[in-house]
Image (cartoon, rainbow, N blue to C red; front, side, top):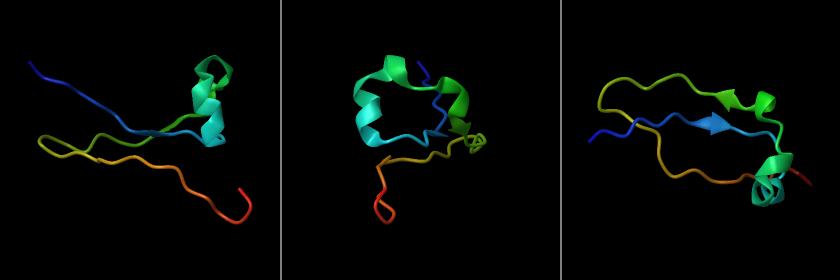
Length: 51
């Protein structure tokens, strides 16, 4: 069994993730594939200034 994942950045407040039906999926910025046997891990939210 193989899982294939792709990481995307969602430029929305983290609270919006609790109501995914309200997310604008067209705003997701998908990162390019990392290649065989490589991955990006440990997603997190980021505060910048008052946002």
